Image (cartoon, rainbow, N blue to C red; front, side, top):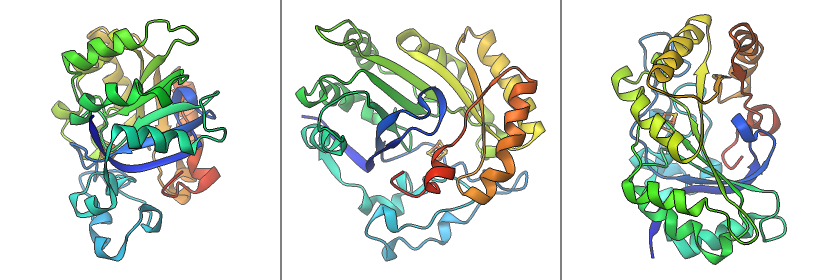
Length: 282
Ligand code: SF4
């Protein structure tokens, strides 16, 4: 039986990307290879906002403060908050997932495995979880990834087999790749990995989703998308406004929608911000 360290597990509406508006269970795994401390900061500066949150004051995710700069899910990878994320057997995770569903069985809901970065070491645990009897009937799953982690050969082969038609359903895997531009504060050579993303396309529907704030970011997104295309990437490209809190998001969303239209790209909203204020657990 495999184990997963779970930062959050909740039922909500998918607010971003291909499945925007679809009722979804979110499984947020613990750990990330990035920090993305540049989000929302003047160019070249890194956010210290999450560093000012004292982990000893919190026993649950939904008590944690939201941040307007840096990574909006900081507690899902910062080791200072690891006491909030239990390590659970795949059996217990499958039970907990199905218990969040309104009818305690899969109907039209979709599963989002997010992070942190869900394709770090946890790849070895997903087959046990996804073939669990309680997951039978799940038709659609998205991995929300930063697009830097190669699939292991074992997990890649397993995904291909899992998507074969079953008696009453055929699962479909999507990779939502939020590749990090320079506004994230991450190193470009580490963040932009077309070789990795092209491999995702071999086993699932894959799209790129760039978080942008300015025209300059949008230009960088377009240039970066061209680099992926030159390596063989064929999927759609979305622009999504920066903004984990409503005040930042509302400054950006219309401008980013206009930039997407101007450049013939898709626009992704962040419905969780206007609907639920992007609170933890939404
Ligand atoms: S890759 Fe995602 S989870 Fe990781 S630090 Fe960046 S925004 Fe946060």
